[in-house]
Picture 1 (cartoon, one colour):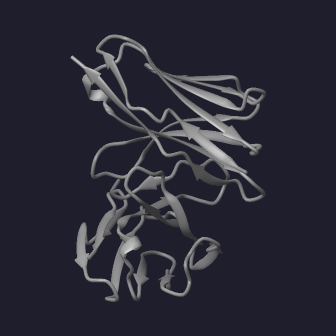
Picture 2: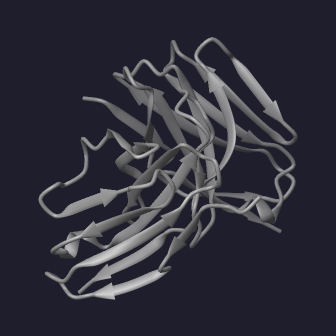
Length: 112
Length: 115
């Protein structure tokens, strides 16, 4: 069956460290993958897009990797700050119409 | 640039009642999405409009849910009658076009509680 899995446990890290979130998928051949951030009581906010032919994308303190052999994307936040605390969602663009299929999200808490 | 607007922000109803949600996308955005997000889960697409036409409603429970976007701008989503399992946040999102990989811009959502 088709599945998207993100870290099921909440991630707690110390300020200044690098946070690494995982998105694994099975039985999909995504054309691209997006990462979004969601704060409590708000809608998701787009962070980064990476396409199937790209290995890595960076934006400021954020880095995303995409390994279509391992069927995995890693999302890194370097020099993490308490303001980075939120839920992070990965979404695959797959199928004929490339519609987004969403993971459950990983909760990140950055402690001062 | 104004973002995606949704109303109401919160709604509490009893099961078997009906409810309607409203969404106004970013000006000029042709594509509009309605998602259902149950607590602790990712968004689930209910329906996608391009202008005033339906692109995908494969996961919309059509026996109780309906949606329209008559003039290709704002949209309403209705549930009639509501069930307990409809308790969720209903998110509206929009994109400028319909190209794959476009950033989706989300509204704040409507939190529905069915008692």
